[in-house]
Length: 61
Image (tube, rainbow, N blue to C red):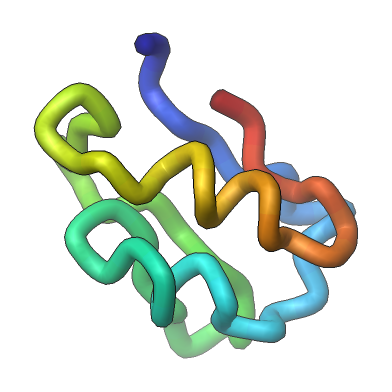
């Protein structure tokens, strides 16, 4: 699986991805979700669930 990305133009900062997949996504001071540096979806089984749960489809896998 490719590295996950967050489309900052779409992200509304709901933090659902960080709650569902905290080993890959985190909320930063800008109020948006970010991918944790060196995080890997292959090591985590939560990326697809986080992407599917994003209300604005801001997560790109």
